[in-house]
Length: 578
Image (cartoon, rainbow, N blue to C red; front, side, top):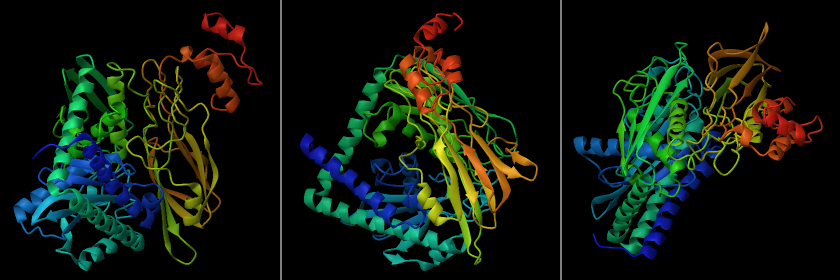
């Protein structure tokens, strides 16, 4: 295949990343659905023509999508090998969560790029559609017991055949959505993103030639794998274990254990999930491909210097028990996959904190809190407000965790309240940081948030799919856990909370009533009593930490006016009564 000089390789790497970034931007700017347009719940990438492996990913989309998409592209490659008939101008569409998907809301478009009659690579686009049928508007159905209750399943079919658009496929898609106009707009945004990607890639190939660009793909993957091996070699050999829990599966109110043992042996890692719960009735199962994709994201958090392509996974072996919650097969429900993959990332942090505490963070807030409000406007039009919400990130070796960030599975953003209020008949009574929600530590976990949402229409149904209502986000290296997730809603007998902590359907509210969501912060990093007392006093003055928490968690005495009491603090930390 030849060699490539470092300067040309760097230039090509930047140009290839720019192609994926431009595809991201094209969809974000043209999508109808705020979850894509504002929250950037979508992603694009370039994939290997034979294996489907990730070659290049965009920097603005969701990394979890890019990791899972490699399996989706491989599913297309396997279908073509079986059925034949692949042509220039074909585009496949599907949302099958068991064929490299995630859940039914995420639609994938895969398009081959031909050069001289052969597939040079594949381009792929994935986006979270606003509504794809199922029992719950917005599709996060916490009481689903099979995928058919979560939405409609589209197998791998051609949306374009040799460039000919298949309107019949679009008709099927729109007929199965409560918001067909939104779906149509998002779909066309994805099509245009792929069109632009093909144009940009062809321009690049015309300038540098297929052989040079293909050599760059090989070299970039090899360098990522070599760097990953070098990073692993720096870790002490051994096995490092973590266990965490999901609150429940939405059907049976019992915790679901997840277990991870990471073994470091020379320049290889083994991630062994033996001991994790078997497949469950409710929708917190995930497919094996999703488990691997979550680990890909976690590795990128820990080994930040490694380029984002398939080389990251080359020195990693996986043990994922068949029949477990982490290896779901049809028709087990998978709608809440986000909650489970967040727990996997948490466990990677907890495990590797034992081997490389200088690399990891306290756990982030650990739930997207998928909240749907839905009803009809006065003129009869249907509205569905689906959104996810932020929380605190974990404290880290260099400082405190981020306040009110988005989940670490993505680079998505939280939809602004101005957009939500403009699009839906709601008003936010409160959108604020939640005091005492970050886990205490030498470096404090970031704060969660408080959202209070009032209904402006006559009535609405409310659905919540969350987690961390019973098992708080852990700290690491002696850091304390963050606050629990909390949701409340009005009833004739007063304020109530979901019996299953963070999951509930068919909550009824009326005009002027509000639901309230209080999200967790991030786990702390390092022992709280090692935190600088002046930093604790500043937190109290800012309203991040109460004076009682300053005393109880940090052993710091702060006066009512926010002033640090140095002598009393020294005595308290020395074990004397203040």
